[in-house]
Amino acid sequence: MYLTIRRPLSHEIEIKKSRFICHLARVSDEEEAQAFIASVRKQYWDARHNCTAFVVGDDQRRERSSDDGEPGGTAGVPMLEVLRRRGVTDTVAVVTRYFGGIKLGAGGLVRAYGGAVSEALDEAGLLERRPVALLAVSTDHTRAGRLENDLRAAGYAVNGMAYEPDGVRIEVGVPEPEVTGFHTWLAEATGGGAQAVAAGRTFVEVPV
Image 1 (cartoon, rainbow, N blue to C red):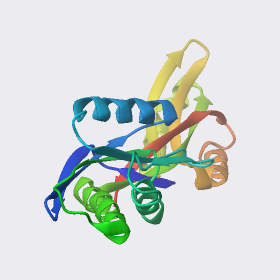
Image 2: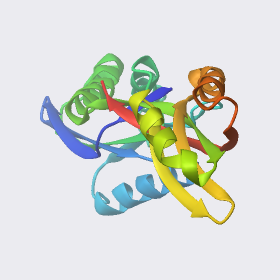
Image 3: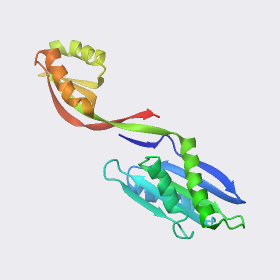
Image 4: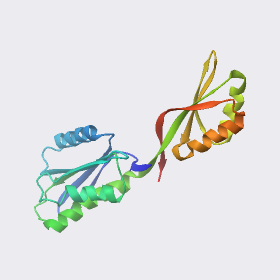
């Protein structure tokens, strides 16, 4: 399971007459992150800086950041650190800066860019994506209706049913840590009359 943003948005703060506009978006891979970054830079072409950071992937995460002309380590890295600290992935942040004429210094820039991302995350809200195993349960026609009811009563998510000449196929979503227990439950509930095989993987999203 992992965290990501609930919705995309743009959030602006002003510090010593400089405008910092943080744009957040959900992305599934680096290509989508780079495309979003390019779109923001195109839209805000007249800004002095469009600094970036993103984290993608649930297991093997990929991270990138860019200061886009700001002094090294004062923009992209603080932005990335906020994403890391909040445990967020599949998320890209672009902070557009319109310079207001007053220099902030290295410490001021770090606080400004990090703060812009932090406030935007608070505004967007987070959700938890939990992995769910998809299992195909095969049973006969006479047992299918009762088994569907039993599955729902036991708290399992029935995603669909396919009626075929030789039986019924029920697709069930089971939280990954509970798969072994599900096989045990199925064997007991049907007296060994139904079988379940892996049919893929998906995620459910729960607000946090």
